[in-house]
Amino acid sequence: MIDSFKTLLSKVDADYADIRYEKKFETSIVFAGKELSKASTSSTDGYVVRVLKDGGFASGVFTKPEDAQKVMAMVVENAKLTGRNSLQPVKLAPVEVIKAVFKPELQEDPRKVSFAEKLELTRQANLIPFSHPSVATTWTVYNEEIREKCLVTTEGSEIQEELVTVSLGGRITARDGNLVQEIVVQSGGGNGFQTVRNQEQNFADRTRIAVDLLTAEPVSGGVYNCILNPGMAAVFTHEAFGHSSEADCIESRPVLRNKMQLGAKLGSEKLSITDDATIPGLVGFYRFDDEGVRVRRTELLKNGVLVGRLHSRRTAALFNEPISGHAIAEDYRYPPIIRMGTIFIEPGQDSLEEMFAMLGDGLYLLDAKGGQTASDNFTFGAQYGYLVKNGKPAGMIRDINVSGNLFQTMLNITAVGNDIEYSKRGGCGKGQMNPRSCKGAPHILAQNLVIGGK
Image (cartoon, rainbow, N blue to C red; front, side, top):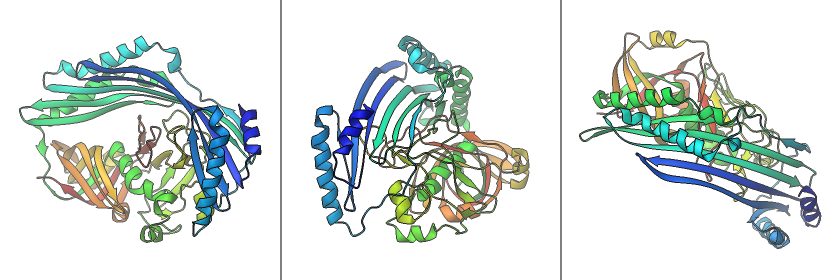
């Protein structure tokens, strides 16, 4: 296949071209309540070609090998047209030429586990919440995705990489009359099927939280000092800060781009944020992005100062900043765009007990749900929380919404925990879905968060 790609690319009249071929294998099992609503396996494959010609950059997709030359010729013409109609010609940052074959180390390859076993594992996990009479329904999903990728470029790179993602989780819904409360449960990772085994206690613990929320008090709206648990802090990091660190999100937004200048003081000196997709086993792990760039650990915020950004080859050239290896496609149907790999807040020095003592009176908020960002403002929900009195968690609270300004909130982070947790299931819907987008954080203490409630 590589030789045929090299032959095809050698005939292209372009300044640069690449072709990526992918096979994608998916397994999906879904229980809606006690009913099995989906049980499927599928495999698809296809090609993406990209061409840079006379300052224009274009791409095309096809699924039949016999269409390759026709699609390539069309993409070349589209690149020429784009170049003639663009005010700023596209340039690509230089990168090393790579020839590599990479497969991740799996503790248990899901391809060696029977479909029947996967179905039974999902069924048993789904039944656990129903042991409690207050549970009204569930939505339990097993998902498995395997991508086998091959990329060849006119610069000489030849890369084959395999990505394996497995997850088991969903939603648990408890009801008491008209009051309904919902909790998310998740497990999984990027290093094999064992990440979804032995999840009985996880499902039982999350069921108990959903049921306890039926007797929790709605939070009273106001301004609070808050401890955010790793799940809540990680979503804040991804949504409120992470997208602003993706160069394509700010390149045509002058106000935000001006705020996000390297060297700008954006947060508390306690706060450091990194994207590191090289950590093995996490759902966000990979070696090479979909442009054939070796991903590297990228410091974004260091002691409150912006020190880095996530780039594609195009934006690295545009910003005149280092390439980072963060151009990722959902699958063979798409050209890559800039995506976070594994973004996280670096652990600090404070224990959770010390942070509760610092907080005194306030709120302890756990596990994000929903939310949106608009420029540098954000609104997120918390799945549940606790009042904190004199440094001790007190009554459980529900119906929690948190809103604020990204930059002010980062300045208001006064303590960062010495623990860290990473998401077990990826997900990001920027332009394309990215089921491997991972996030992490320790506990953090933030001052003056606006809390919506009764």
